[in-house]
Each structure stands twice: as structure tokens, then as C-alpha cells.
Image (cartoon, rainbow, N blue to C red; front, side):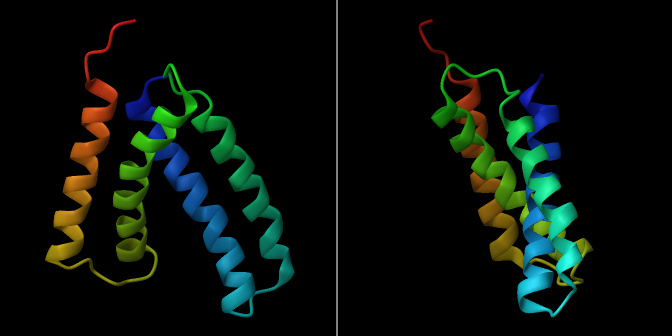
Length: 108
């Protein structure tokens, strides 16, 4: 699968899973939140394993930039807190780094 498709889906799955645990632990939500949370984190792991990369570490490193941007979008849409200009600048920088990691010409 293409990283451009997998990474956003993986980010959504990871953030949703982590948010479910956060809700249970920090917001007094019922422990039932853990069930979809664990399922979502398992989906995240499976999705990330679908990325066409020669090495897991490279796939994970590039994913990190997408995760940062997606986390800020989650904060904005799910939590109602708009990112500030520093958040946007940082996300752009991280996405640029992810693009360099994935698009760099490598002997292969």
C-alpha cells in the first residue's frame, strides 16, 4: 500500500486508540473504552506494517511526521483547540522531514 494512504489511516487508528486509553485513565470514562482502544491500536500496527519501505525504522521515522500533523488535527477537530502558528510551522517541518525520508533516492 502507498504510504500516502497508509500513514493517515495509521495515524487515525493510533490517535483514536490512545485517546480511548486517555479517556479511560484521565477523564473517568468507563473501562469499556479500552476495548475499541486496543482494537484501534492493533489496526494501527497492522497498517504501519503495510508500508513499502526497506526497513521498519525508516517507515516508522517517516510516519512520525504524519503522526505529529494528525495529532494537531485531532486536537483541533475532536478537542476543539485550534493549533497556533507554531503548531502549524512545526507540523509543516515534520511533514517535510517525512517526505525527505521517503522520497530520498537510495541505492537499492
